Amino acid sequence: MNEKIILHSDLNNFYASVERRLNPELAGVPLAVCGSKEERHGIVLAKSEEAKRAGVKTGDTIWRAKQKCPGLVTVPPHFDRYIDFSRRVKAIYARYTEYIESYGIDECWLDISNFLSVFPRFNGAARAEGMCTDEYLRFLGDTIRFAVRDELGLTVSVGVSFNKIFAKLGSDLKKPDGTSVISLSNFKNVIYPLPVEDLLMVGGATSKKLRAMGLTTIGSLAAADDDKIIKTFGKFGATLLTYARGRDTSPVAHVDDERQLKSIGNSQTYAYDLVYPEQIERNIYVLSESVAARLRESDRGKADTVHLWVRYDDLTSFQVQKKVRHTALCSEIAQTAFELFKANVRHPFAVRSLGVTVSGFDGQSSQITLDEACGSYSRREKVERAVDGIRKKHGYASIQRGILIDDPAGMHNDVKNSHLIKPARFEDRPEGRVNGDGAEGGRNPFEDDGDEPFGGGEF
Image (cartoon, rainbow, N blue to C red; front, side, top):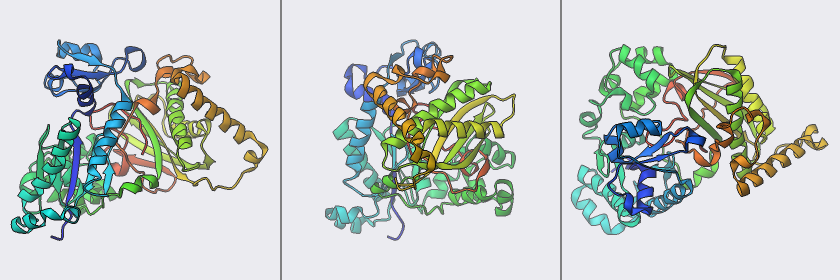
């Protein structure tokens, strides 16, 4: 067998499932994990299958969710538990491969091409069946899926394919608790009839453009004229065609590659549109504090590039970035991000989501600047580290910046510890604006898949 065997695993209703695992009395009842009314405006962060069938959606207010599902039981989130279970699941995956690439707290890609070298006792069966057969690929997916279910009491949907994009698609086809195989022999029959927006990186704006061109399925995109797609979408159009045609060759990262990630960021989708500059500034500071705190906790030193991502109420979005002196200070990150916003957005505006990211880490080896030598930078960093310590001991709301005094909700918005997102990497770009539907014009690189909470996290 020459092709890769790539598996994508997606833990089903992860937060709600962990709550049920720890509280068996919640089994079988419609369940929603919700933020507090004071801190999160009573938003649904995750829901069980029963709640989902009743129409409850991520982002619903609690009162609206209970209108849809009168018997809904709500519980607060316990992020430390979710992180613990995520790590335990990945420990199971590590028995089968060293190539494990996270796609958020509840999803992973695994390259299990060398499965037989890890478990040679299956060699005979593989040779008898033929390792390329769909049955054998399903067996591999089921083996890992059953291990998670039997050992941790969680269910996982699995897609097995010859590339990452189709494996991700496969994990969405049988939910909850199923294995789908998308092989070289069947991918056109399985993938091509699916709606074009099911393809990874096709967000709302991209989907509208494709449908306006008469391209409503993945198959129609795969058969589209290259020049027409690239003329419309630029470089991203070539990526879309590669994905739709099953020609993606991107590797699954080694488990140790997490240490080499090139950016740290947070984002948030808001319960209401931000329409005033002071709202933007406040929320950029909230996001920048979480980014700076994560950066200080890491071993990556300081960053020399600040990225800002903005999504409007009509779901269009853009990214901008700017080089700065190496820094790990919230104030410098936030000031740069807000300057980028002011330079690229004119009032009136209605902003639905914001994201702040830093990259270009110095690995703690940058030269000492005059400012640092004079003590200004050092003093401010000590203050921010002191704030980190106070919050760790007494809670996020125990100490706040004055800019948040007019926003009580923001004073409790602990993005760092209560928001987890899908990971993404910024492409290397020249300084300036990037138009489109997120990274390379595709799906917003910060946004979750609607199954878990809005915005926030490290990548």
